[in-house]
Length: 249
Image (cartoon, rainbow, N blue to C red; front, side, top):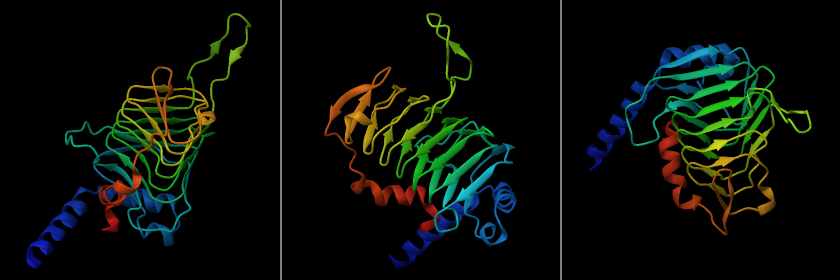
């Protein structure tokens, strides 16, 4: 049993090592951080990724550890991906600690934008994340695969009754321990409380904190479906850490 365990550990570490895009990982870390931080390689890239623009600020506030932020990680069971991961950071992105981003994601931070990931903030595969103003994800806030988080209408919208234009951008604040299911649209002016679950194929576009924590939202637009409803995070934490915080093991 001892030799079998040693072999499994070696095999897991070897696969992990081979999955890293070492060229992009080394370039990004030494481009964006001082030497004392860069040599620890806190940001790891997995698989193909395009750096459209990385002239903005990347700030890590938590203790610096190897691979604490992963981009292009394999989360879902499907193993076939398009290889279209793209990073465009012109503004500011802050990581409070560990964060993990899945396959085929597009992350754009406008030059006036501010984005913040809480500890263990996560984007599933094929998420479109567009920040032109302000987006904040709380601790252990997860965005499901094929979702979009967009804090702007992208185009000028006008109310024909009043003749006034609707503000194009509005801040998004996702609370701690939020589970955003797959194919959810999180639009500008969305604010969710702590311990919130959003059902699949929903669209959120307003402040839901009036309902308090431990709630289920769903629909287009999303509305309150249940109270006293919560994901049992404690029963999953060890598994999530093994699958996402992989350099810890």
